[in-house]
Each structure stands twice: as structure tokens, then as C-alpha cells.
Length: 284
Image (cartoon, rainbow, N blue to C red; front, side):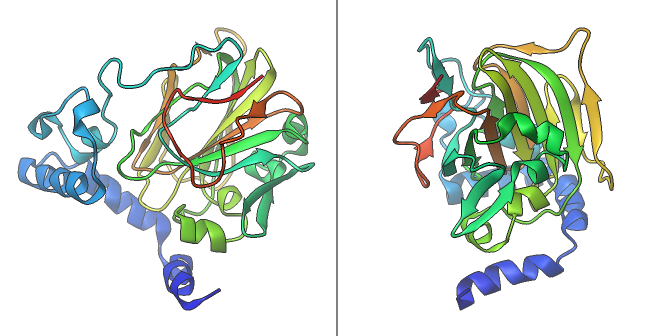
């Protein structure tokens, strides 16, 4: 590790990650007009947020910074692929990695990896359906739209809230913290789809004040010490391809898992590629 990553990553091991995230939550939910407007203006300026595609463009009408951060898009701002066997990108962002799951092993970056078993809460039986399958990891930056949508139509089978750390998920940290996505706090949603099971893993990070889903509301916080799970049988939520399924209150990463031979990613789905919600990223 050279000096720059060391200075970027090592302090994160020492920080009170969850405490800082709780403070950030209070800050980003503040409804003081001067404060929330100042923060919104600076984020738009620093990160180049495209407000022309937002459903609401007047920053005075956002109740808080978080309300701005989880803003809706105007109708037609994104197109969900209509290809019959197409897989829609679940979020705006950039590809961190995408490819095959090697047995139980998912590639992270620069020789680092983690297992599907670890990612899905430590249960080998739950991970069995994804052995030798396919994965795609998408990072959402502060400028991106922060609602998450379905790559395929699916019926929810199970949701987990897995405790963990809150390391940053930026490029430097991803390259230098072993097993990052399986160490951070996360919400795992497993769906039954026309091509078998699909897992959407919403990974928390430093300053991500909460993760929520459309059927449950806010899942985290609270901070927990043991895995929580919800099983859906009667009246299980059914979501269409492209339908909103959740959101990050502050940004992070979503990981998509499919089973063996279920999907084929587009050849252009490579690390570093910018992607938009709804675009074609693969086929089944």
C-alpha cells in the first residue's frame, strides 16, 4: 500500500463509524432553511448534480438535505430497457466490478475478494443458490440518483439486516480493505424471478444514515449486533422490472447476484464504466 491509500484508509479503522453516521443523520435531516439550502447548493456545485432531470428543481422546496438527496426524477428522465430478456441496471453510478462468481468467491478489487456466504449473512445454505453464478457491483457517488430499482420482475422471499462496519466504499477503500462489502452493514433482499433467485445487497458506508425499502420503510438504523431476518410467504411483495425497491439516505453501493448460468452480462459492463438506471446491462 502506498502512502496516499494508507492515509485515506487507515484512519477509517480508528473512527467511531456508527457514531459519526448517527451525527450525519441528524445533520442531513435538519429542516433549518439556511442550513439545508447551503449544503444542497454546495453539493450541487462540487459534484455537478444535474438538477434538470429532477422532478423538483427548486431547492427551497426540499424539506431537508436528505429530501434533496433522495429526490425523484422527472418522468422520462430514465428509460427502463424493454428488451424481452434484458436485465435493467438497478441504479445510477459506476461499475465497481462485474463478472462470474468463482464457486463461492466474489472479486472485489486488486486481488481482494469475499464470499457469497459472508455477503449473505454467513449462511452457506442461503449462498448455495448463487455458487458459480454472476455478480455486478455498482457504486453510487454523491451526484447520483439514490433510489434503487428492480433489474427484473421478482417476488420477495427474504430480507436480512446484517450488522457490520461502515467503511467508505470509494475506490481507494475498495482497493485496500479486505472483504469490504462483506464487512460493512448491509440489507440483503432475495427475490424469486423468472430466471431463479436474485439477491440485491444494499451496502451501507460511512455517513450513510439509513437504508430503506419500499415494503418495509427504514431498515437501518437501528444499529444491531445480530442478523435480523424477515421471511415473506403470504402476500409477498411483487415488484415489476424497473420498479423502485429501496433507497440510500446518503450514498453507497448495490450488489446484484444471480445463480449459475442464469444471466450473461453485457461485454461493456466493466470496472469504471458509468451506468444509468434502466439501461441494458445483460440478458437471461
